[in-house]
Structure formats: C-alpha cells, structure tokens
Length: 393
Ligand SMILES: Cc1ncc(COP(=O)(O)O)c(C=O)c1O
Image (cartoon, rainbow, N blue to C red; front, side, top):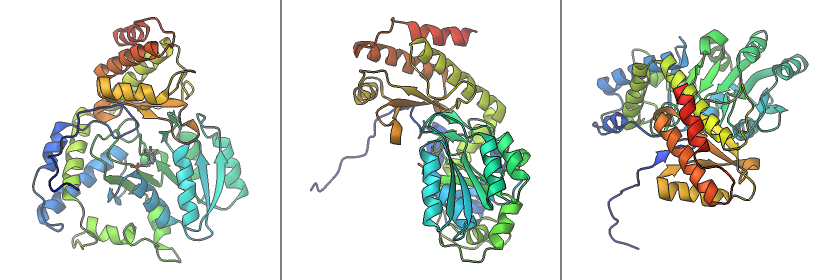
C-alpha cells in the first residue's frame, strides 16, 4: 500500500464511443465554481433555469421536468418505479440491450412484462404494438428511441399515435438521443421521457433529465401502493425541485447541476435544429466512409441513429487489438459490442461535442490504416476520400 498517491492526470481522449462524449471546457469551468448549500436561494435559481432549459430540449411544457441524481439507468428506474405496481402489465419493446434492461427492472418491481422482441438491428413494427394493446390490458408501453447497442433509431410517431388512443402510458428512453435529434415530447404525446447528461448533451455523467406528462402524474398520484424507492419517489422529489417552499430531499450535486446548466446553455446557443443537423451530417459522412471501405452497417437505411453507428467487424480482424491501437496510437475511444453483439461489432459515437467533421475524418483514416495492417483488404484513401466527397457535396 502506498502512503501517497500521485496527482490525477487522466489522459486526454477523443471520445467516439457510445458515451460519454467529450465535455466542453466551459462545462469543466462551471464545475469549478463553489459548492453552496442545497437550499441556497442562488442554487434554487440555477435549478429553476436548468428546468426551463430542459423543457426546451425535451420540447415540452410538462411542469415535472428536472434532472434526477444518477445516470441514465436512474432515469429508467425512476420512470418505472413511480408508475408500475405489482401485477401491472407493461409492454416492453426489445430490440437491443437497453430494452432488455427495462424488462429486468419491470420484473424487479413485480410488474408483468409483455414482450415484443425483434432481432437486434431492427425496429419495433408499430402494428405489433397495436395488436398487443388490443389483446392485453397494458398500463405502460416502454421503448428505447436510439438503441445504443445496435445504432437503430426507432421512429416514434406511429407508435405514439397508437398508444394515444388507449389508456396506456408511453415511456421513451432517450438516453442516447436527447440533444442529438428531435424529441417531440408534447407533440407526440409521450408521457415519460428520460435521458442522461453524458451523451448528446456532452456533460459529465451523473444526472438523468426526466419529464412526466399530466396523465402520468395523475396515475402516480392514484397508486394503491407506496413507491418502493425513497430516493426516486417523484412525489418527494417534486417538493424539492418545485414550488414556493422547497423542502430537503437529498443533497444533490451542485457541481453536476452547474455542469448541466452550462451544457444546456451551449446546446441552446447552438440552436436545437442546427445541432440536430450537425449530428445528422457527421453521421452520414461517417457511414459513407465506412461503406466505402466495404464495412457492413448494422442498422438499415432510414433507421440509422445520428449519434451512434454500429458496424460489423470484418472476419479475421481482432476487435480488441484494433480498439487498443486506436486508443494507444490515436487517443480515440470507440465502443465494442454489447450482449449478443460482443466481439462482433464496433460502436462509433458522434455525440454532442464529439460530433465534428475533424473527428469523422480522423477515425476513418485511423481505421483505414489499422484495418489494412490487420490484413483487411482496403485501398488506401478509400474511406477518407468518401468522407471528403460527402463534406464537399
Ligand atoms: C439507450 C440507453 N439507455 C440506458 C442507458 C443507461 O444509461 P447509464 O449508463 O447512464 O446508466 C444507456 C447507456 O448507454 C443507453 O444507451
């Protein structure tokens, strides 16, 4: 055991994995501002501004909109544990790793998951949701928007129209998508939406923005059983986040609130639609480079998420070796596959601050070189030329 440890000096990385993404220096600077009391009027004012900015990003007027303490999974747990009671039937749409996590949580809460499952890489067909809603008495339909494990972006309009015609609530996981593509919470009538700060919002991990519709809140108020979690109980959290007389619930991390405040400000300064367009263009450029190199994308045309691209690892190429070399020689982190895709795909994220033309060119040229050295047949310059041509078009 050492007596004294060295000062921390984590390496600088270019974060092109499934999150976290690179953090803007303005956000780090905000985190250096002083910690103050959890009921200090200045902190409460900053919290109110965070709430206002989150409503803009979620495109909602929902009053209960705020960041939870915890990562995206805390958002998932909160959404579910406040609504689900034992024996409630929950329609869980599984098209990848995170849909399966929702099922796990529903089961832990004593709910009954009714599953619609499609092969990884595909979307959930709306008609399957419609059929299940006719056959069963579903309390909540849960679906992941951008499935980070496959790079698939689920269209939400048709499904939301179907769910709207029933008494069921619609819950959407936007952990990967919020800040990178439009989330039309009010227009689509989505009842619960949660996210995380470390992906397209480009903050540090640690907070989970969430929003609840009036209908969802009414259902929570009418529960028969107590909410099993004290920490994630919306009725208690509401008394700290909203109203004239704010009441202690738990000691939030002011530093993370400052970080989110700055990150949201950066998002709104750029402008939502401009930001979405930047994500769309850079992802398209990346895909054109990967395809030119003969690599196979997992998500089909039309359903490709603009913040995460999953690509099959060519036969005979070592997943671990390429990722290790990218990190060591270029400082680039990309993600490996999760679950059934482990060792079979790479996940390249272009989220928030990390979604830049420079990063696309860098990762494509690095992959081109490393793949060629690993024995994969690719003509030098093929990927980079395709990316350059895309940007020039
Ligand atoms: C779609 C999706 N949902 C949920 C999560 C869980 O979020 P966290 O790792 O922040 O707890 C992730 C994380 O990658 C995700 O991509």
